[in-house]
Every structure is written in C-alpha cells, then in structure tokens.
Image (cartoon, rainbow, N blue to C red; front, side):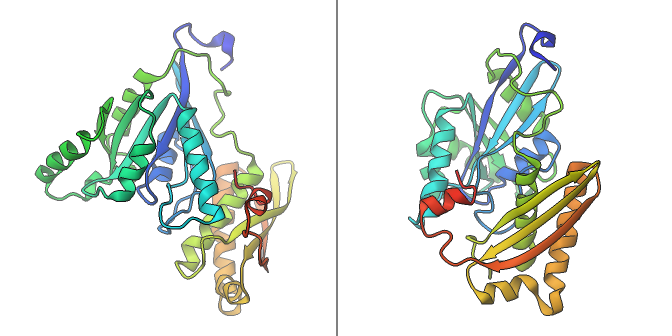
Length: 300
C-alpha cells in the first residue's frame, strides 16, 4: 500500500507494548501481527531490543513496539540500557498496551505503570486470562487494577490462544491517529533478516539450555549471505565462561545440534526459503561490562 492508495481516513500509529518481564508481551505482538518477529522463552528478560511488528489492514496500519520487561532488581549496564529503551518508547507512542498477568499484580507491575505518561491513551491488557479457573475471581482483580489509572479500555486476553485479540485490535484501532501508512503493506517488521536470524538463534539457546545460562549471553551473525532464495547464515554464540560453552555444546555436540536445527527451521519459515546455518560457540569475556560494549553488540 502506498500513501496515494490509502483512504483519506486511514489510521496509522505506534503502539508500545509494556509490562514487567514474562507477562507475554512478545507472544502478544507475534499473535497480533501473525508472524514471529519477537522471540519468546520461559526465561525472564528474553527480549532485549526494541522490536517492531507491523500489521496493515484496509483502513489502518498497526505498528507494534515490543519492549524489554522493565528491570527493577539489578542496576547493571545491561538493565539500565533496557530500561532506557522502555522509557523512550513510551514517550514516542500513540497508544500504550499495559500488559499484566491475570490474577497477579505486584510492585514490579506498579513500577511499570508509574512510567506510563498520563497524556497517552493506555489500554489495560490482562493476559493469560485462560489460566483463571474461577472466572468470578477475575472481576475483583480487574476492578482493583482499573482503580490505579484511567484506562481507555480493559481487555482480558490469552495471547497464546488468541482469545479476544480481535477485540483488542478493534480498541487499538479507535485510538490510532489519522495518518498515511509508514511502512509497505507487506512489511511485518523494520528489522533486517540478519537481526532476526540472531534473535532466533538466541531464543533457541535460552529455550534448550535453560536457566543455567546467564541472560547476558548473546548471538552475533558473522556472515549473512543470500544466493537466490537460499540464505547462508554463520552465527557465533557468545558466552562468558568455558563452562557456559560446554552447556551450549552439550554431550558430543547434541545440544548445539538441537539449537541449530530448530533455529534453521524457524528461519526457513520466517524467510520463506531454505537456510544453511552454521553456529560456533565462543567465550567473549568482558563484552557486556559497559554500555559502549552493549551498543557494539546491538543493544539500543
């Protein structure tokens, strides 16, 4: 869709998705746009970047921004950088989706809520509502949280099951400003394939290695080549210690093979073509010791 083809009342804007870690922000965005552009895992703080997901309909373009979960426990360089990403995104958004987990509201949730500007329309999104067996218990919880701010709308959802996501998108659409589309109608993200490849590998590392591996481990794409429909991807998993390297490789390389296979399959689905993937594991001590080092490895 070009600007000239868009109707005069076309709506387009940025929608920030915010919340404490592990409330399902990335899953929510992926489901809303219908493609996996933001990685997910059970490990807290999987999302480290400002990830944009785009969905274009006949009369609107939704530009979702998935943010890292706001960190309150540790004040290191990584978390300061992540938190700055969250606050910058909030001030630049047209609509904010404040995501919490059904039945759970703690200090970390309140701290995120306190960051949301008063002059930006904010929807309360209560995720994982399918986990509440006694539905009558959900209403008092909703009322408790709703009293904390004048929310534009309150929508209980299950991102994983796509429950109520159409209703949520309808509510968002009402709040978007009248603007021509920013991106092409077939775009699903503003991120490069190289970036997405790194994120996919990082997701598999956390998914298959588990909590033993520090979340400061990351992935660097050393080469990304395209020959026709074939992508050749050469990636390095950067870890802090030799013991971490052994965890990722596994017994006789079994863990690394599993990571590589699953990452390749996800890339082929996202890129809609064959992928040749090679992965190495490297110890890179000191790479995340300061903010300059974080920026060098893609943190914003």
